[in-house]
Amino acid sequence: MFIRSRSKPLKRLVPPIGLTLILLGLVIYAVQGTQEQMASEALRMTGESVRRATVQCYALEGAYAIDLQYLMDNYGIRPDTSHFVVHYMFLGDNLLPDITVIPLNM
Image 1 (tube, helix red, strand yellow):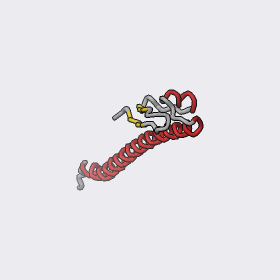
Image 2 (cartoon, one colour; image 1 turned 30 degrees about the vertical axis):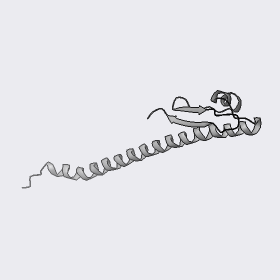
Image 3 (cartoon, rainbow, N blue to C red; image 1 turned 180 degrees about the vertical axis):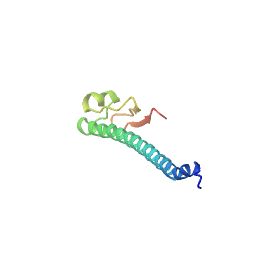
């Protein structure tokens, strides 16, 4: 007479559950990496758009914009102020302003 042990079905479930947990961990890790990469790209693109508008203003008007608001009003840039702080320091009519983009969530 055979007596079935209840631990055998559990032993058969351990490898699939373990594999599922490992795969879930890998997916979470990949999603976090993608989110960090997207945030980094958004930071880079924000700085690039402000610099591009600044240079375009100089090329068209012969002087750099006095402040960021002038670029927003006349050159259509819209930095995402909910995620970034854009520091724009006017240095003179013919000197490229100091432009720094800082993420808010750090």
